[in-house]
Length: 134
Image (cartoon, rainbow, N blue to C red; front, side):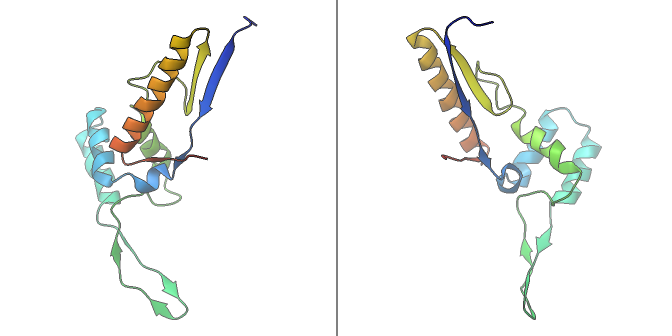
């Protein structure tokens, strides 16, 4: 209940998590998670080798190879997001989806919260994700 102590909470917003993580990183994480190899091959066939182009007025652009992202509306989007973020909390004491929180009773609690944030930034850089500052 009410213990009369403060809790600091930080809400994390990442930019387009599924649009910026390269396919190879996503597929590697899927393999490491223990998913059957046939499923990984199937997901790879869906993601790798895709191209896109745009039409402006009557002009159609050349095809451009897509190296990251998951097709909009795909039923794989939620699963592949979980694959990308599944190890985000490995080196942190704060645990919740994209909220880092800690009860603050001593100065060490503030330092540990900062360590969690530092670990999150390191994880984001290592996974090609951008954390929004605002």
